[in-house]
Amino acid sequence: MDITGFLKSQFICHLLICYIFIVSGLIINFIQLFTLILWPINKQLFRRINCRLAYSISSQMVMLLEWWSGTDCTLYTDPESFHKYGKENAIVILNHNFEIDFLCGWNFCERFGVLGSAKVLAKKELSYVPVIGWMWYFLEIVFCKRKWEEDRKTVMQGLFNLRDYPENFWFLIHCEGTRFTEQKHQISMQVAEAKGLPKLKYHLLPRTKGFAVTVQCLRNVVSAVYDSTLNFRNNENPTLLGVLSGKKYHADLYVRRIPLEEIPEDEQECSSWLHKLYQEKDAIQEEYYRTGIYPQTPIVPPRRPWTLLNWLFWALLLLYPLFKLLINMVSSGSSLTLASFAFVFIVASVGVRWMIGVTEINKGSTYGNNDNKQKHKVLTWNFTVGETCTCSSPLFTLGLRASILVGFI
Image 1 (cartoon, rainbow, N blue to C red):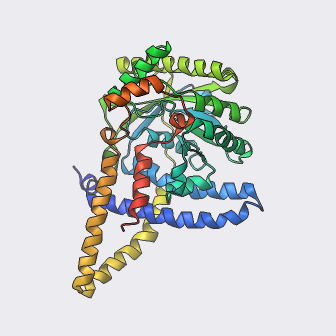
Image 2 (image 1 turned 90 degrees about the vertical axis):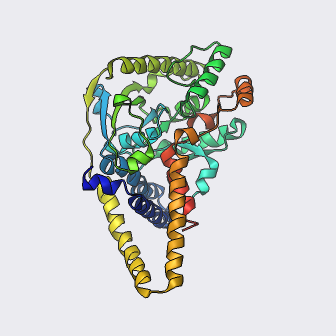
Image 3 (image 1 turned 30 degrees about the horizontal axis):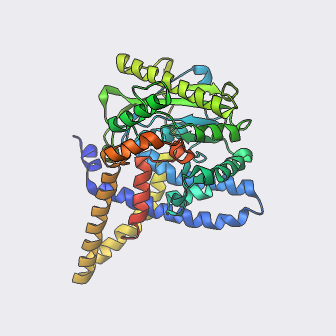
């Protein structure tokens, strides 16, 4: 291991990265608060400013993958479709198999210049969480309570509000609703059998209501659906801790562009279309496992420098006062000051290690892990909008935990 790799693997570096993310995020949230005065005066200017402010937060996460880890991402797609990416509004369907798949989705957004305006459907509680949750609030992210009877009206209203959005945006959806595990797959296939639906080998059964409503509300605004399937070469099992430690991965992302006019408007027909799409995704996944490549042309979109430059700006701005404070504390010679510093460092260290731990797949959602709950879910599985689209990425969890950790620091 070279000196750079050694430094990246050190926990003190991980701690500093979290510090920069938390403090810069809170500063940006504070600035976003003052942009509210623009809403009644110039709503579109408010939106454009908040896209840039949100980019300053989310691009720090993408920087970890692109520059810190140096992970390669090869895009397999139709060259004619490639030239349309980033130049139109789109709904992006992502598979949900890896700890960092949502981060790779954001990397896809970044390469085509739509990271700052990327949208998701998230749980209402997250709008109250500092840094990520507050950033999403100002981005007009669609929030829901995961109760379809209550959510339908508010979700549709939130989606309709995006119809005059001034920036090109991508609406990212995990239609499976939760990350793939063998236990969850068994439950999902029991549901498929009970409902007479085709079984899948490599995906969970898609939840359809949220997707159908999204298509319905954004029709004539969104030009296409980007069906995306992510895999990693050589049976790599990427983790957030690996990315933070500077480990390089090799991602392959297959994207096919489907014009929105090809998707049925009727909700039932749209649901059937989505089930058929997942059968096709299953076949594509099986082909990748057999050959190690996707169909279509491999393209490597160039990295843009902005994620790195943004992070360097915040690092230079925030690390200097931190180091100056630490030097003053050490030079003071006060036992109480040194003890306080040691205590804060230990609490922060434990907190960051805990944050990283909860992002692991085996510590994620307990859905499908309880036999009694499994039996109940087979009988009562509802295809609700919250389960369809709610962001549950481990990287988001890191941001969420980091936001909470600021209370200890």
